Image (tube, one colour):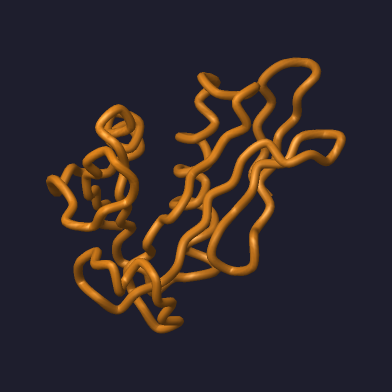
Length: 138
């Protein structure tokens, strides 16, 4: 379990979600944020790789990194991404070689701060705004 103390009233810890994601839990137990995704054997993000889970895959496709609006701006999304890379993947999914995701332009800085590199505009359409593919080699 990875722990973080933000102030005297909020002790946070991560908890695994199945074997492929994690959640941030506050005390008393409340969901503050989560990260989830799926595995793919594809070498690139495609519509298919984002919608099909391949348990033998070496690419972890991040679908969501969410933080309760009341806790945004505290560094929790980056903390979750770091905990996922450093604590959970090596133990639960050691075969994973890369993490990939699609984000909006205003989120690129967050993911770059967590070690992702910008691949470029995504061909996958999710919503009205242009998405950008990002990748992190582990």
